[in-house]
Length: 180
Image (cartoon, rainbow, N blue to C red; front, side, top):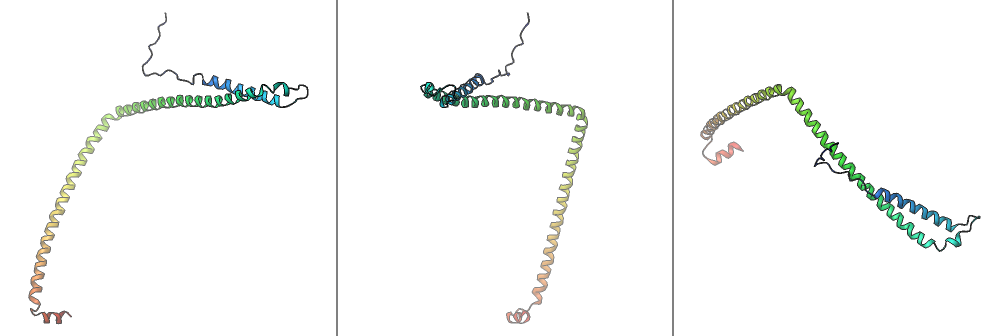
């Protein structure tokens, strides 16, 4: 006896469009037949005069044709929605498969380049830490030089102030004469 494979939990049954494609085909056929009956009943073809015989059937045929045309449009929309859902499901499955393939490729690349990658990573970290140390030392040097230049500037400014204070006359009138 052949044993069946157990169904996977994550597999969805094929939703399909169900009865809608069949119903759409029947509705289209009925609407076309109704239109033919209306056409035949409206015109005299010369060899058969169906205008008078079909006049009683015309009203129900018009109603049935309208209902079948509307049903055909509705069934077409339902079929399209079911097909779109099936296509979206297939697309989602392909996305998952592509993601798994990409993950497998990444793992293989990591296996091939794993040791080299780890070595380069540790070397990069060491270089980054030494770069940070160099940056810190340069910032400290610049701060010390800036502090030294500020002190030198203050000394020079005080010398200039002392020299100019003693050189200018004490009298305000004499100052304005010298300046103006």
